[in-house]
Image (tube, rainbow, N blue to C red):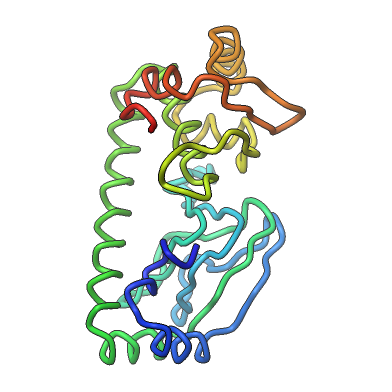
Length: 224
């Protein structure tokens, strides 16, 4: 996680100084980190676990806008969370910082400011990718792409996908995020398993049987 987080651009002394300003926090599944409308929300780096960024529409329906995986940075440094909730999907450990501490660190360490800007750009591209996926891709591609991204996030190296991982989302949450029905999600999981791309293990476990096939269905680059 250290090599992937934004603070990786700092040297050991600078990282130690930044860490001294932060505090560790553990969230259980369903616990909220930020609530929509928070005026003084802190910033955080996710050390382990998974978070969802969601909004509730006028009819009271939740829409998951994005997911946060380990090494991800959470926090709007220049505006409050006007419409978004950030909630733990699994037990999650974070390193949190007061907004003032992050602003001070950005002023002190220009490399950190550039790293956070790059991370914001990556998050924006990911959000656009999700919108494009749900608007135009087939159900097979939507689900395969999500599973592929989970395998990327669960891997401890950028060289290959994780062989096994736990789904951080329920089937209902997956359906809502991808614009599908729960029945379609269940059926497509079965089809991916029959095709030999994955194997389901227990309630939420996924074993990656053929990473190249999953990448092909997902329209992702072939894994190394």
